[in-house]
Amino acid sequence: MRSALLGAVFTFVLGTVTAGIFLHLRVQTLASVDFRISYPSVPVEVTEAIKAAEARYYSQEGISRRLFEEAEDMLALVWPGGVTALNLSVGPYRIKADTIQSLLPWAIEEGFLTLIDAEPERALSAIAYFSEQPALADWGATVVLENLRWRHPNLRKMSWDRISSDPQLIAKLYSGYMGAGGDWATWESTLMPGPEAVRRMDLN
Image (cartoon, rainbow, N blue to C red):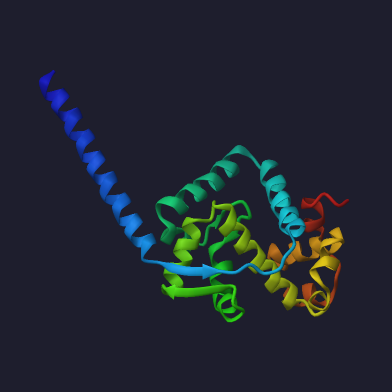
């Protein structure tokens, strides 16, 4: 009985010390990453429509898929570097790590991201860590959407007010947000949204 009690106490102390070391290292790592963000002028109506479409889509998936998505979000808090390495989609906008990573140079060039004391890879890990925070999640979505607007020959000529007032144009951006089915040339040649974007945004 005494040995079992001592074993339980030892396990508890070891677990507490290990957790304390882990949290200390996590705090030190995050504190060493200093960056500033600036929001593109994407209307909240657009980001909310995208977020609602993503939430609607995943709510219709099976329990195993929903649990997997939740596990990805938890992993972002425990091992943000792993989220980057595994290219997982995290946060309410389900943005993949390589999507943000590919846009970091553009975001820096356009003034949406300023690295004060951080390498891009470390900044990406920090962004993944805070992906559940509304401010940084919204920032990531607006950067993706602003880049998509500039990528499309016709959308770049339109103001955000014009785009936000037309659900079909928002759905067009959403088609690109989902990867344009890998056919970017077709996506850039028309203003018609893809059928999956229309379905997810419930525009039928």
